[in-house]
Amino acid sequence: MLKILKNCRVINVENGEISQVAISIQNDEIQTIDNTVDERGSSLVIDMQGAYILPGLISCHTHLTIVFPFHLSDPNEDAAMTAFRTYRRGQDALKAGVTTVRTVGETNRADIALRKSIAAGWVTGPRIFSAGLGVSVTGGHGHGFTAEADGADDFRKKCREDLLAGANHIKIFLTGGIAHKDETFDESQMSDEEIQATVEVAKSKGTYVCAHVGDSGPIMRGVKAGVRCFEHTYNLDAKTASAIKEIDGFIVPTLGVTRSKDWMSQHGFEEWTICKAVSAAPDHLESIKTAVKAGVTLVNGTDIPPGDSDDGAPIVVREMEHCVEAGLSPLQAVQTATLNAAKLIRSNNLGVIKPGAKADFIATTANPVEDVRNLREIFFVMQGGAIVRDDRE
Image (tube, rainbow, N blue to C red; front, side, top):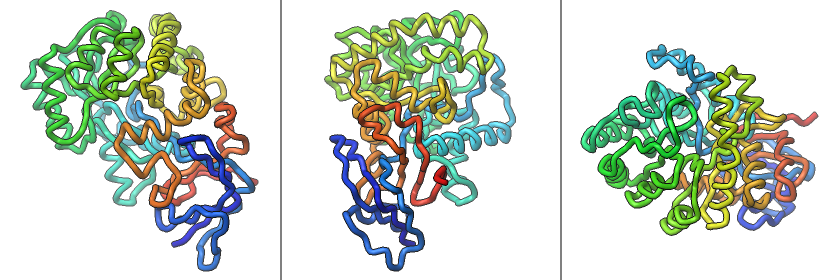
């Protein structure tokens, strides 16, 4: 089945260059990108009327099952309830232009169930790269919604169980965070042996470890053990940022976690949680500025469901705006949710527009490479050649 998008201004997310072209789509992949295209035999032709076309966005720190406010979470929740919430969050993400998510710990592994349902054709949803349950120490930061382990052998077992269940990568928790009142960002919650055990398991299956982590000391321990991706990094110094750069590691800043006071209030967060988050915002932003100066690869991730909104913008777009504030150019901010994200999840057919890539697109009327805030006006979303959203009159 041949589909054509014509009169497109396609943005090359590698260099920001724009080409006035038509895109032909066969099944779920891009077939050709050219100045002209033969419309004969096509099942659908859409005139994009000069809209700016980018790859579908990729959010790399997503929790589709998380409950807000946190204290309402039920670790014994019926799996069916979890599944319904996961499906709804996936739909919200798709409509916001997020065609792919990397999940980092989900109750009941409901994201894997959703992925299987999508593959079977029962429902639609974003492409999902899963961490399974994720693994934390007993009573650690992930308590209540992750697998819990103590000691290197126990961590090996829990990580293997996640991979056996269908996880694509492993998620661990090196420190405390914002969600728990008595935790701190520099509180180490895993031993070096436990961290190394998770990395060994990941490498044995050709994948990687990502880690929730707040402070430079535990981050450096993760670097030395072979952790590939660091989530949040609330307090990051220049030496540690350089160490991440040297191993070609990634940071998912989740700046919105400490800069979304109104969203937190609307979702019933307790006052102490809001205060803890907001008070961390200045250091958090400075940490990401340090990462930018060191040349660390940043990847878009929200922690907040990517289909939610804050300050009138989809959270995934708001995160790009925060990254610009941290020192990225608009093009670099777009790359966090396209090129860089695809590199992290090890995909060569996502995050780009080229023949053979998946036909995942978003469209705006104004150029986001000039001003990333133009992504607030996404009006068209396509995933795998199927129209998810079309706001044209």
